[in-house]
Length: 303
Ligand SMILES: *[C@@H]1O[C@H](CO)[C@@H](O)[C@H](O)[C@H]1NC(C)=O
Ligand SMILES: *[C@@H]1O[C@H](CO)[C@@H](O)[C@H](O)[C@H]1NC(C)=O
Ligand SMILES: *[C@@H]1O[C@H](CO)[C@@H](O)[C@H](O)[C@H]1NC(C)=O
Ligand SMILES: *[C@@H]1O[C@H](CO)[C@@H](O)[C@H](O)[C@H]1NC(C)=O
Image (cartoon, rainbow, N blue to C red; front, side):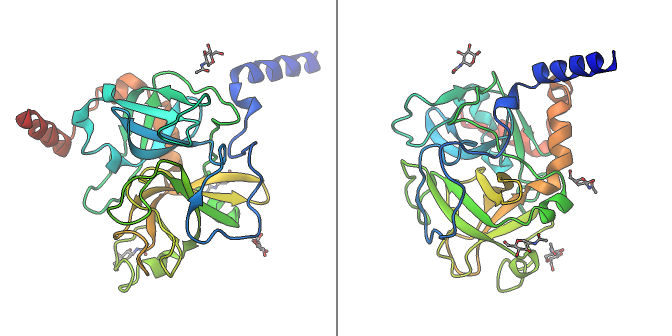
């Protein structure tokens, strides 16, 4: 009798979990990161970063993002904060994409049904630069479209003892340059927070909610158009990738002692959880905050 009960529970669980075919942070088309380092950026292989999305405004790449599960995408608040007036209907989220101009058969496009910006986002310091997007319909997971893992908390982030970290995106390869057509990737090193905060580096701008990554020489960095996209690190123990950061800001791109600064996912584990479970109507009825109100008014006056 007890065994039967257990079996029923197990089958109910598997029905409720359509993710079972693809667990997070694993890519089926590309081998795990090897010992050789990538110096500078390079073109990403198809399927290398199956959780990377392109968030587009009227079919133009605007920001990157990371698939967390069938319905939710993680991105940066600064990608939406000043663009709310554009209207959700003009945004699309594309997954399974490598070449912007040639989407191909593996691409899945979804519209956005809700934008949940972090309530404590600060547009002058970029603190709490995380936003969740609720998709209008779920992504279907394939070899080209998969979710990334997120650290459960700060302790977990440290315990994962990451060996290789990568950034990816369609951002320009130099400051004020043009966007690239093919997804790029680069290996980066996590920079100690205290070092990154030194007066000769970011001079006190780095909070506990941020993580710095790059190379001290500045040869490798995220740049414009990479915003919102993943800083993803590989756990050799678990053989999977975690999204450790969300591309947030940097001083120009690739300058020495000015690595990329990323919103530190492990600090938002609780927020990610509650924001995904709080009901849509509760969020919709939250009053619009002052700056957004002012922005909307400004946008209306422009029209
Ligand atoms: C996703 O899966 C659903 C259900 O299996 C199917 O109806 C739909 O066509 C699929 N969509 C895409 C874009 O593959
Ligand atoms: C952090 O996450 C780990 C792994 O899920 C868990 O075992 C641990 O209890 C968590 N610690 C705290 C302080 O929440
Ligand atoms: C972390 O990984 C390195 C190799 O990348 C290894 O030498 C070290 O022992 C690991 N530390 C822990 C605590 O597992
Ligand atoms: C960075 O420096 C500023 C100014 O000294 C300080 O207030 C802040 O706490 C520091 N951040 C971290 C993560 O130590």
